[in-house]
View 1: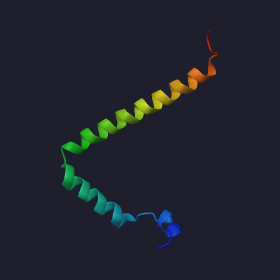
View 2 (view 1 turned 120 degrees about the vertical axis):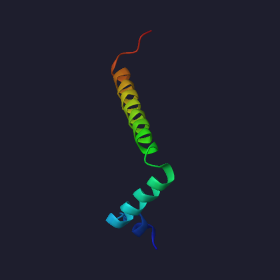
View 3 (view 1 turned 135 degrees about the vertical axis):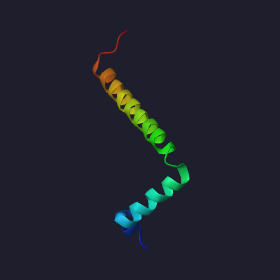
View 4 (view 1 turned 90 degrees about the horizontal axis):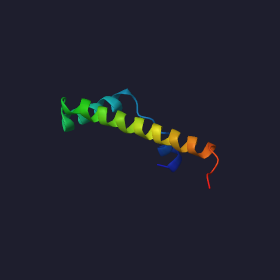
Length: 63
């Protein structure tokens, strides 16, 4: 398998279903909402932090 074929591979519906079933078996149905909630909070914090960095770069430096 060449590197290009590995990079261009995208999983189809059967592969995605298998991955979701494995995740469900590993974490259980009750734990998945908690994991997604934590992931959402982390993404929100990352976006807020990146916006804060952009805003601080626009302001002139104080001496």
